[in-house]
Length: 344
Ligand SMILES: *Cc1c(COP(=O)(O)O)cnc(C)c1O
Image 1 (spheres, rainbow, N blue to C red):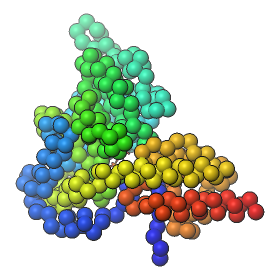
Image 2 (image 1 turned 30 degrees about the vertical axis):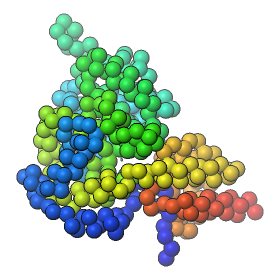
Image 3 (image 1 turned 135 degrees about the vertical axis):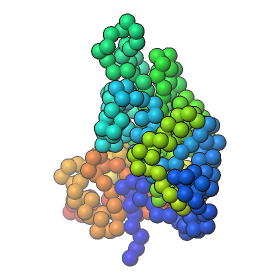
Image 4 (image 1 turned 60 degrees about the horizontal axis):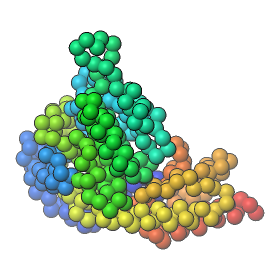
């Protein structure tokens, strides 16, 4: 059977032969006891690369974000977050359910930013003489990239300054922050500099099978370590997956450029198709508007040809390590074939 071209997400990559070799060669220990050398190496690497004091390995970005929120906020505290942000909308309500932390969502602009004036108004008065009405606003959470877009760094700096001025900490959901760094031709440390903490996924474009890393100050990471245990994230010979993450960091960061170029080529190709609209393309993500009458049939037509896309929440195509420029071209041809067939 020929290759599947899977544009549903950058989470679908399979470990390469090199990555599997690195995994099988990894020295391991019991990470719950802190003696897995490969996990420790990954954590040291990530702390160093991000310019933060410490790092902690997690099975998923959801758990890493949640432990991060729980390490910043106590029961009855509040975090300010985008209405459509992953840490609010796409993580099952974990902060409220498991952390007793109240989200204060704010409507975002199309570029993912929350207007600074709205952030300022959402921060509740708290302290002696200010009454007992409100949750204590403790944290501002941003997300970069946002729908593939890199958040403007000037905005990030202004938002962080505003939050700090009000005594809040600032957390980044940086699931795809490496894409932001590569697209901006800067370092991950620079992207993360305005933040007290960040959660980074290694299982998205970086193509490890499993893994996320939380970074921040040492005392913060120590708190997160205890929450990770409580959340069931203590893993034993986790060095096998940490080795995949190290391999990903050493081999798959710079090549994110290719994914960004392939996404641009995909968007360019699809702009020639009259019946669909390319709404946006940034880094490795393309958003489309497909007429409702065609969405399901197109998906089925492509599936028959070994091409996968998902149009459930929004027609979003994502390029990654297992999608080549030739694959992108083949995908565009198939979309054109579908519409030519329909027209006949
Ligand atoms: C994928 C993702 C996460 C974490 O997801 P996991 O699947 O739990 O690793 C968090 N935020 C954003 C923006 C994401 O895309």
